[in-house]
Amino acid sequence: MANCLVFFLLVLVWLWARASASHIGLGSRLLARDQNEAWVSDNGTFAFGLTPAANARDQFQVAIWFADLPGDRTIVWSANRYACL
Image 1 (tube, helix red, strand yellow):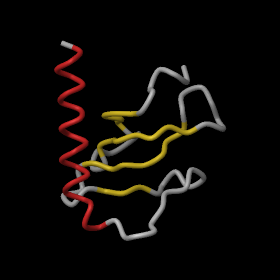
Image 2 (tube, one colour; image 1 turned 90 degrees about the vertical axis):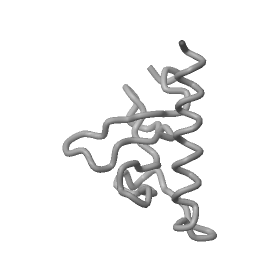
Image 3 (spheres, helix red, strand yellow; image 1 turned 180 degrees about the vertical axis):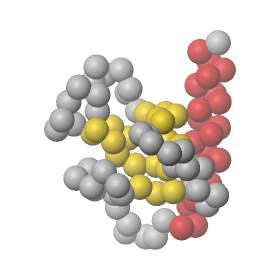
C-alpha cells in the first residue's frame, strides 16, 4: 500500500514538473522568506514551493499543494514531512 502511494506521488511530481518546466526561467529561484512565492502548474491546480514546517517558525519544507483551493494550503506532498514534527 505504501509503495503504491509513493509511486503515485512520484508520478504526480514528475507530471507536474514536466508540465511546468517550460515556465521556470533559467536562474529563477524560490526564497523561504516569501511564503507567497511558488511555481504554479500550467492549469493552476498545483503549486510547488517552500512552506513553514509544522511546529517550527524558522524552518521550511519543500512541498506541493493545491493552488486553486480556497483557504489554507492543502499539502499534497512534502519532503521529510514527519522529520520536523
